[in-house]
Length: 356
Image 1 (cartoon, one colour):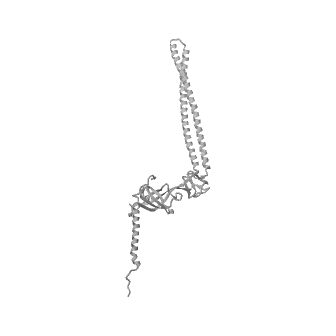
Image 2 (cartoon, one colour; image 1 turned 45 degrees about the horizontal axis):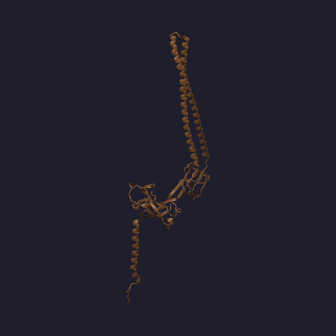
Image 3 (cartoon, helix red, strand yellow; image 1 turned 120 degrees about the vertical axis):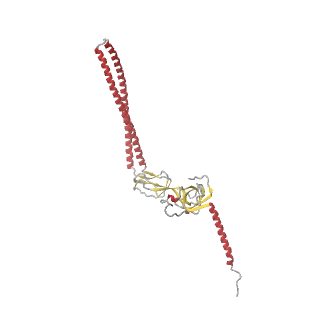
């Protein structure tokens, strides 16, 4: 009977193949381990941007729409106009009321000026009466002595006495006239003040009416692309109703949710490589801009409360804001909401970048 003494070639190569596989696996394992010591990665990341809903401040019928869906607009550009006829009438009414109030001020000032003239005339008359009273008192004193000496007649003395009493009565009358004219002037001054206050009130009413009128012209709140258009010409819209949104796609950043055990070695300015799922063949250079002040769970609608029920420890996620460098690629193609893979190089910190 013939026996085989040499093993097949496959059995001889098997140990070498296993050794090569172990070596290659060990090489990549060590390489991955060394890489993980200096890099932190996550695929829980999305692109974000400022998305501004546009809402009218006044109700009205849509008169004109000056944009199309997905059209680019500039900040301050007129995009929608509302029928403003009723608002314009209110603004005109407020203007007329303002002009009437201003005319009342001029009238009140004219009356005050007339009253002040009367006060001045009464004061001048009072000076004349005061001189007459002084002369009458002097004559009365002299005639009284002369009458005692029998140098004048009783008739002459009585005439001097009558003149004195008449001057005194006239002085009393002038004093009352002065008080009345001064009171009238003070009252007219109050009317002037009230008229000026009314002007301020009417001015505020006119400003408010013009402000409401300006709201009939709706402008873009920022540069970007119009999206989610929900309005048509002739439609009646309410104040606060969302008409469309403007997406500012020129300033896009990444919100990456890292595990709480991964953020200890990160700091603002740390270099980041971002790979957007839609463009996997390109790596975008970025950096850590800031960290959320709380975990994502704390901002949820129903934040967890570990003091209730049975406690199960769950690794929390910390939102990290990542901004692209100024020389980023694909700036016109990056869209808010796209998924991304983020790798942070904890050994590389960029200088001169804006962090907040």
